[in-house]
Structure formats: structure tokens, C-alpha cells
Length: 133
Image 1 (cartoon, rainbow, N blue to C red):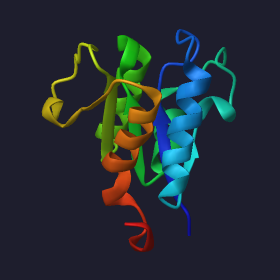
Image 2: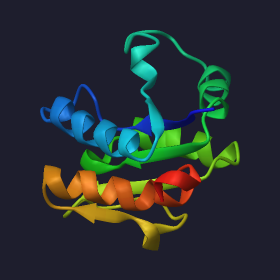
Image 3: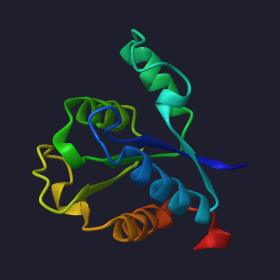
């Protein structure tokens, strides 16, 4: 069974979204896991309920949140993941102010796309299938 990672990240507000996504997905797949991007399954404009997001979250084994750009929607989804009891790994670009209070010390900061991929790999490694550790 493949382990799915619920990916939380800025989309429409991030001009570098496509490049960040490529690096995140590469790190997730290198660990033998599958990235789950919510907007691949619905439109950004869809009216979606908290229950629907929780249901998506619960289909995954771990959440990965990139809190760069300080998007409220990313914090909201991370809060839903926490509330659902899903383990979460958090990354952010160097210089990002972190507004969450839970596990603020555990945020892994990156300063380039190469470093983003490396940090994602490192923070998700504990959740990877045993053969890829």
C-alpha cells in the first residue's frame, strides 16, 4: 500500500508554485510515498466544507505543509490536519514568519528549491516505508 502525503502549500498566490510543487513531489516520491494535492481533485473556486477537507486529510498518512507566504488557507488546512490527529511536517522559506503555535520549533526552513527538496525529504523520512529510510 502506498502512503499518501496531504500537501498543503500556497497555489494561486505563489508565482513559484509550479517549481515548488515539482521539488516537493520529487522528495515525496523518492521516499516511496504519493503526494496528494487537493486542487488536483477539485477546483480552487469550489465551495468546499471542512468535513470534505477532513475526509481528504484522513485518506492520507501524513500532512506536509509549506507555510511560505503566510497564507491563511494553509494554516486552516494544517489546523484541520492537526485536529484530525494526522501527523504533520512543516517547511517554510527562510524569512517566513510562522504564526502557528503548535510545534513552531519543528519547522524546517529552506533557502532554495534544492534545499526545499532536501528539507521535505528529511521531514518526511520518519513516515516513509521502511525500505526507503
